[in-house]
Amino acid sequence: MTDFDAVIIGAGVVGLAIGRKLSIEGKSVAVIEEQDTFGTITSSRNSGVIHAGVYYDKGSLKAKFCPEGNRRIYEYCEKYNVPHLNTGKFIVATSNDEIEKLISIYEKAIDAGVEGIKRVTKDYVNEHEPLVDCVEALYVPTTGIVDQNALMRSYIGEIEDSGSNVVFNSQFIKATRNENVFEIVIATSVEETKIKSGILINASGLYAEKNAKKLDFLDNSFIPKTYLAKGNYFETGKDLKIRHLIYPIPNEASLGLHLGLDLGMQVRFGPDVEWVDDIDYKVNPNRLDAFYNDIKKYLPHFDKSLLKPGYSGIRPKLKNKGEGKSDFLIQGSEMHSIKGMVNLFGIESPGLTSSLVIADYVYELIA
Ligand SMILES: Cc1cc2nc3c(=O)[nH]c(=O)nc-3n(C[C@H](O)[C@H](O)[C@H](O)COP(=O)(O)OP(=O)(O)OC[C@H]3O[C@@H](n4cnc5c(N)ncnc54)[C@H](O)[C@@H]3O)c2cc1C
Image 1 (cartoon, rainbow, N blue to C red):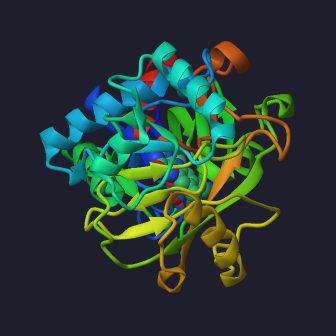
Image 2 (image 1 turned 180 degrees about the horizontal axis):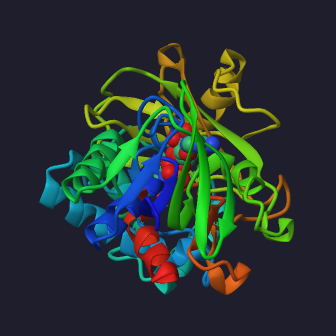
């Protein structure tokens, strides 16, 4: 006898999407979250961008999930009235040296099936965004923005409507396995309890490595090291009459310090990349000059005094600085031979965009 068909560790956007999928497929689910509400860690510390799938290496899970995730998030937001906006974006080359890179991004995106992407001239960009400077650009019509908290609330609504639960202030402590049943110890502020489940999903984001080490039946060789790449944002709090997202040419660890918009059209910049050893979300105001130097390459008349330190998020990366691009790693029983167990590691961007597709993938792994 089990208490639940499935227990999911972590009520971020991915854990909730998986909880939603399993519960609407008829499973009794408990999503357990150690914080007092959902999505307070990486899932609300991001850019809120519905990515198109432009950058990812062929054969990677990111390339497999993102373009479909993009279509699915738009459909979902329309159906459930989740606030979102299909802004489109420009990826800008700001010097002739960057054009070769721009063309290779374009070719990779065409290969990945990104819909509607096209090469455009500086004049085309300026017709739509007069403040932006570049030598050439890519226009990506399917990029947009979403209210990630409203999206997560909607996932929770579906979990609850299906008769399952998201339980806050409940910390996963450890799990053992006995006759195909997971015995999971959870601590609340008052007590430790043990619950039994046939399925256990570790969707604890930045903490996935730490929590995987508390599964006494999982061999350590399956647990990758997680490196932390902090992304800082600086905000303006202003509508600068820019209506598209503006991205520079990406680097190995990030999509570049881009101009982002919230749904009120306020402009912010970031995230940058700061490799860190500890989780600390303070934004160092001394990074302002580095931000300004990047911004003025594509926004030459930008007023530096508008920049204020904003928020930050931390990417759980499976490759360290200088080691190349990191992909998602989702391990089911075909990898570790533990039926009913799925570990999700390295769920950085585009995890928000891919959340519904990741959930389907996890469902297939345990089906
Ligand atoms: C700077 C930045 C910008 C990004 N921008 C975008 C973007 O624009 N578009 C996009 O698609 N993606 C973006 N991403 C990626 C996206 O935010 C993540 O992929 C996604 O939020 C990951 O969700 P998650 O549910 O896996 O993790 P999380 O949101 O981290 O959720 C994990 C949860 O597990 C809980 N937890 C941990 N340990 C325990 C425990 N022991 N017991 C109980 N609960 C526990 C945590 O409290 C947390 O709530 C960005 C990420 C970063 C860092």
